[in-house]
Length: 219
Ligand SMILES: Cc1cc2nc3c(=O)[nH]c(=O)nc-3n(C[C@H](O)[C@H](O)[C@H](O)COP(=O)(O)O)c2cc1C
Image 1: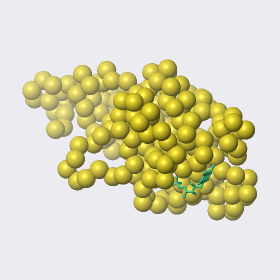
Image 2 (image 1 turned 90 degrees about the vertical axis):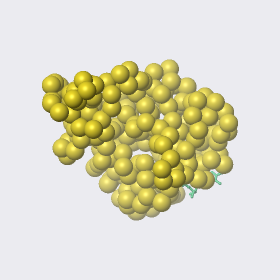
Image 3 (image 1 turned 135 degrees about the horizontal axis):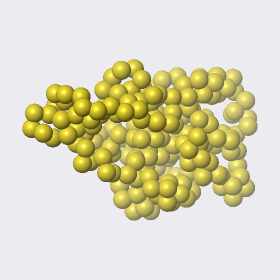
Image 4 (image 1 turned 30 degrees about the horizontal axis):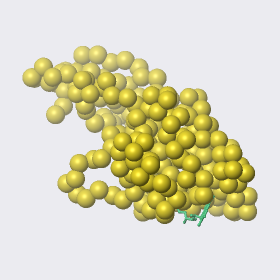
């Protein structure tokens, strides 16, 4: 359904790389709809104005690094800041998580695989995306535009959606020295992706700074 008439438009100070404008309009039945237009001039999906009362939705993409077991701390911090959180884990990352605890905390299933055609979309569109921890593997594949896991597909698409993306890499110094990784960082930074400090150690040794992901979104 598309609006018959544009009644109102106002700037939307969305953080991130894309300037978005929000439009409200009503259809012939008098139902009000709201949509946003991305920088590229494309309409995102339309939704009834009444649904807009929902909390902003944060995708937390989790990769298969040792610190992933502590992602509950990030979810708590995000929920304290009034984010509704959905976790998308790489297939290997599910083995690093207490999946039952994370699902209880978010009130949603952890997504790791694509849905079947015809199934409803399990999560709303994201208002922001955090990748924490981000692995060497996922950072390189994401920068190369590879989309062979749901996590990677989500990250590749997030750029086009124009939502802010914050990354906390957990990559050893030896791996980070690889030229391909340095090229990946350069490319992603050029796309507006916000990187926190690199963490090289275990959660105990390194003190993984989960809160940094949310600080990056506040910029
Ligand atoms: C116990 C353990 C800890 C790991 N920690 C890291 C890490 O901190 N950073 C990293 O880039 N890879 C780490 N790896 C290797 C990744 O799990 C591996 O590269 C995997 O392919 C990443 O998959 P993903 O990017 O799809 O999550 C670790 C592997 C194991 C078994």
